[in-house]
Amino acid sequence: MKLQDQLALNKKEKKALLATNFYNYETLAAVLTAAKRLNTSLILQLSESSIHYMGLEVAKSLADSARSQFGVNAWLHLDHGQDINLIKQCIDIGFDSVMIDASEKPFEENIKVTSEIVEYASKKNINVEAELGYVAKLGQAQEMVYTQPDEAREFVERTGVNALAIAVGSAHGFYKEMPKLQLNLIEEINNATTAALVLHGSSGIPHDQVKESIKRGITKINLATEIKNIFMKSLQQILANNEEIDLRKVFPRATASATQLVTEKLKMINF
Image 1: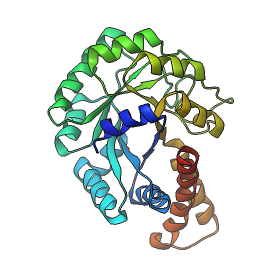
Image 2: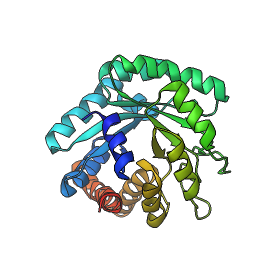
Image 3: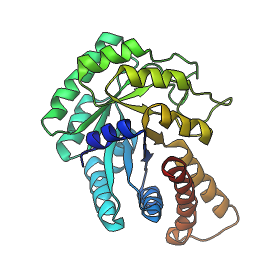
Image 4: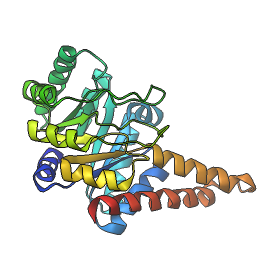
């Protein structure tokens, strides 16, 4: 099933997919092990920086071979694409989904740029996600400027985008204070638009809020920061008093900690 079709079904059935970023083989193996353990689907996400780190062809091939090896139903998605040329390269090379993030541009320019990507992606019939509102990125002030239902409706109607990341109280990175999702606003936006709604910045949001957001219309939940954090924190602890130089003996323990994290998140969403 195409990702856009799965997300549309999720919207109707009030279900969600977990979308997990990966940064190397170890973090990719971690999320796929968790999905296989629970016999569930998920979305694999690559950021532009991860693609620059690994190389586009290597990253794509790694995801393809790992999906096959682990036997997991997983879609490959470009997260927070801002480089138009790279977004088009991801479409051409066979990604299942791309995100065009022009959320920091004025409303009309966001519509123009997003529409260009939607038109280009339509040739390959792949999912396109955009963002509307202010979801703070790493290092940015975590002030809240929420997506408005009327603007969301207009944006989706004029661009034809399949999925929409909305600003409803979340932010990327760790929170300085306990986040509080605007659950009623999620429901209003969901009723106002045909697009599948996406929650970015789920790391650190209490599970009960995430579960309630799904009931209100969220169909895709992004998880990145917690994966990086638990892998690196585990690795640092392992290496603190360890002279082992064989990374093949060291990395699996850090990978296992990331697997446990993603397993818990998948259980939260699916069970």
